[in-house]
Image (cartoon, rainbow, N blue to C red; front, top):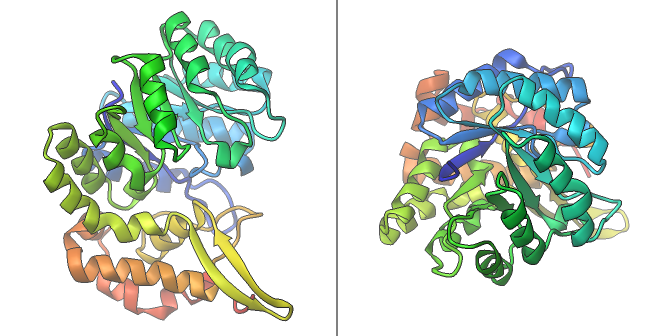
Length: 345
C-alpha cells in the first residue's frame, strides 16, 4: 500500500482565513490527475497546529472523499494528547480514511517507551482496520519514537506497517530496517532524502510523503517509480530538475536589524504556499503565527521557480495546464507577489 509519492497537502485558505474547501477539492483533483499514490490531509504542511478539530475533520473528509478509490487517503490525527488523538481518529475512520499519521507527541516529550505504550498502541488497537503510520520528526517535536520501539510495534500491532521517517539520520533509518524487517514500509519525510533512502540497500524506502509534490506531483512520483525500478541514473536526473523546489521547503536568509544580523527561517509550509500563490494555485495565506516571507526570502522562492522554468519548464507545465495560468507571467509580474513579503524586517 505504501509505495510511491503521497502528497502532504497544504490546506488552502480564503483571504479572510477560512478553510477553502473548493480550493482543496481542486488541489486533490490536480494531485490525482498527476498520478500520486495518495494524499495526506492536515499534516504539518496542512497547518494542523492552527486548525481546530472541526476544521481538521472538515479537511480530512474533503480529502478522503476526493481521493476515493483512486489512491490512499491518510488523515493526520496525531497530537500530544492520546485521548484527543483517539477522538480525531474515530472521526477519520467514520469518513472513510484508510490510514492515519501519528506525529510523535510534541512539547510534553514522552519517552520512546511511552510513545509506544501510551500513544501508538492504544490507537492501533482501538482502530484495527486503519493503517497507523508513526511520524518521527524530532526536530519538530523534541522527542523520538526509536527504531527498537517501532520494531516492537510492528510485531505486536498488525496495522503498524509503515513509518514516516524525518530524522535526517541515515543510520537511524538503517536501524529501523533492521528492527522492523523486510515487509515494513519506510517513507521519506524529507523530499531531498527520498532518492538516497530508496537507493540505500540497508534502508530500501518505498516512497515519500512529499511537500514539493504540492507543486510537482507527477515529477516526484516519477522519481520514486524510477528509483524503485532500479533506474537510479534517470531518477537522479529527475531529482536534479526538482532540486530548486526541494531547496525552498525551508528558507533561511540573513537579515539586518537595528541590533545586527539575524537568520530568519521561513519554515514549511510558508515558502510552498507563497509559491503556490504566485503560480495562481489555490493556497491563500498561512494562519498566524505564520505570516509572510522577508523580501530576501521571497526572492529566494522566486529565484528557485525561475530556475526550474529556465532549465526544466516541463516540471511546472502541469500547473499551467490544470489551473490555466501562464507561469512566465506569474513569475515576472510583481503585482502578483509584492504583498507576500514584509516591507522590512
